[in-house]
Length: 225
Image (cartoon, rainbow, N blue to C red):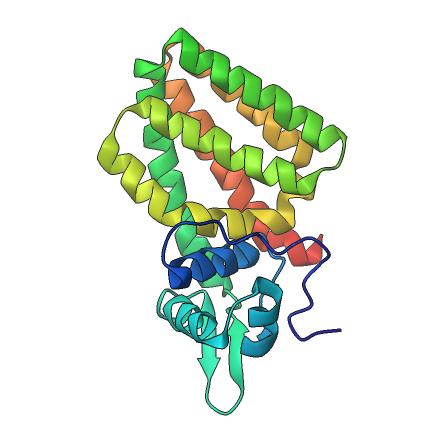
């Protein structure tokens, strides 16, 4: 097996146009976020270049950028490795996520219109189907889309920008517990939609806090599950 050990069909196509180094960076970040490249996995420039169909230079530049952003660790005389997040790193990130998402839920309850609520109901239905068919990748994507939609309905651009900065790391932490959270997570989504539909800002805030706290606790308990 190659050091990169990429699953069949995991490598995203490099979409054009755009600078090659940017497209390589986005492709590698997506592979890390979805855990096609696992935490602690050795990243060999030549193998990644071969998978992506590019030279080693844009791969090297992408790895350096990912190192700066905390996704990759560059170790002297050893090479590049996918960063292994500590429990403290995860806890801090997921705690900040709770603060942002709780406020988004409150604002969504105050501002959501019928079209927005219909979109949430549709995402919730799709999520339940994904869980029922054990399609973890789709469930993770739909979960991220659901939370992004609530953030959009909140109507606060600054809040959305801050949430966007943590969104990919939330996906990174959520992926290994997506199957465990599964059905219960989408039941919590359903209850949250009901509070938003009723315009109950206090209940929407509380439900979102509880929902994101369940995810945080599940992440920390994953190794013992």
